[in-house]
Amino acid sequence: MGTVIAYAKDHAMRETDASDRNTRSAMSIGIDIGGMSVKLGVVDHDTIIDKRVVKVDKTSTAEEIVHNLVNVCKEFMETYSICKIGVGTPGIISNGKVSAANLPFKEFNLAEALENRLNLPVKIENDANCAALGESKAGGSKGAKNSMLITLGTGIGGGIIINNAIYRGRGNAGEIGHLCLEPGGKQCHCGKQGCWEQFASVTALINMTNDAIKENPGSILAGIALTSGEVSGETVFLGVEQDCEVAKKVLDSYVIYLAEGINSLISIFDPEMILLSGGLSNAGDQLLAPLKEKINSDTVVSVSVLKNDAGLIGAANL
Figure (tube, rainbow, N blue to C red):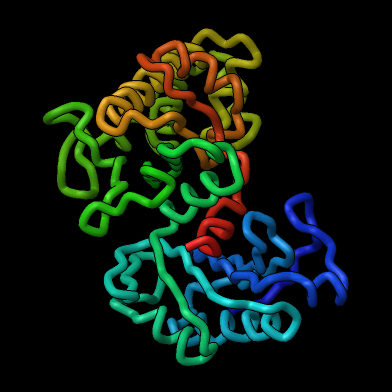
């Protein structure tokens, strides 16, 4: 079973007293499901009023996860006037049914399970789309009619906003990590070769860093990895900070691949803004400055503002 943990109020939340709650219009509950935890929050338009997290054990069943989510939602409903619930989840979604590789959902009708227990309308959406919508409503791409959110992690994911609404295509648009960057290139887990995420994900950057360390064992970069005991997405940026030429070459190569994919997306969608999210977005100008030099457009490229709250706010606005 999962454990429910109450988050303390942070900068994204507003303190509310009983009289304030009574005068508010109905609010929404946003649920952001991840592989290790689920974030739930009460959202008033673009502001998180209250937030909780449910830790997900590897042994948790779908019903156990739903049970814990329902309990938290009921707590919210006792305190706030709630009109609807939105859920962002990884995986494939069809008619409210979810199938996700890293969760116990195999064509599980999550929408129906929550609606039956809470008597509120429930909408389910892909987590990357929710994050893109959250940034569009309240974050870095607010005010842009057409925008994209690119998530750099183990792979590359994305959410697309066109005319202020999520673009879904036939249902699974946004699998941008599988753009073909190099025909006949590296094998991808999807079965194809040369996918963008094989060259521009955090995993790819770590692999590039490891290769550079093997070729340059006496470099500053190798020393950083030895001191920390591991190579992460941050390692190369630490090397650049210390003026390591090996690290600079790795970052230059990585940025070329990242920019190639972004330029392709700009050619197709022509958005006003593209935001980067995930751990690498914390590198800020170390990543953005060289990247912007290689973007062949006036499209604004920046980083996520809402960070881990983007998916929750987006889900609440479905």
